[in-house]
Image 1: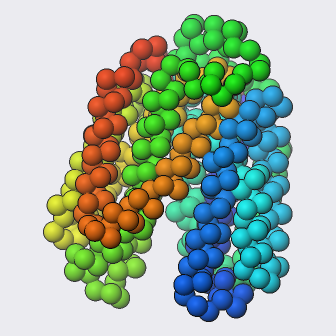
Image 2 (image 1 turned 180 degrees about the vertical axis):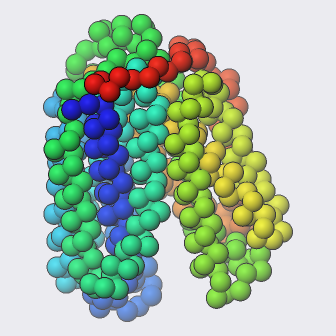
Length: 415
């Protein structure tokens, strides 16, 4: 086994798994119709509860699963999570009541969280100078999977029916499980020169048994967690209100869904490119410099939304915004990984996942309430938040992790 096969395993598993999730979840309201719920308000209630319970529980338990991964290995924890997805997705195909769906989604929240662990596995097995590239590659897969999933899911549901689509989603997770089981070799763990000698000393000095407070105390860790929360908050602020804004700018009712879908797809595609190219940018700039610059550029994109007078403005600003969000997110995870000793990296990434999921949960609530008064006010809040992140990282993001990483050398094929 080589670094390449390890990276392929976690990237493929992430792409297939994240796609499997979005094969069916966007159509959950239709599934509640199939289960006999006809009242629109009740459909919305069950959909919101079922979609929200999983990330809420995952946010609470991600640090716990990360800590277990540090003790017993990342691979077995990812396999455990993927098995739960196979079972829950398959079981959802046979439910008969709305509360069955909610209960299964709650159970899934207790065992989910493999996304953060695959990032940890990529960082662990990356050779010298390749950590940013490894993290960015997996994040690209995690972004592209959900972008493509609904398209394939709608087609599959039309062919085999909505119930059987859950069985297809379970099969996707089974494929991811097999890939990780057969291809990922946990013995391939590299030292990273971008962490420097001080990081090696931290590995040696950090005890196997650590508290969450120990991890939070690592240099700039809390700052990077705040960055990840902020970028996730801003990224998700578009979901509840973008179709409303598209309509406000004069788009006809029959075209709102199409235009909104195009903008969402452009954001996802641009962010994926940002994840992918972040590693190359990290060769020239430090992670804090990239985060500050990306936050500033994303603020500029959001500012265009504030002053938009036509759809053309949105189509010009969206790819810039998405690209900057992708670069900033990958740089933040890379910076955090560089200060976390390898033996507690699972715990650290679990805490970062909690920050990300809290942003995911809080953003639609805050932005929905703000949009009731002013939709443009949401974009103004995004601008203010992104500029605050840029200033905070510029002022506080130096130190041990602020040194420019050494040039990356080609990696031999037998690494």
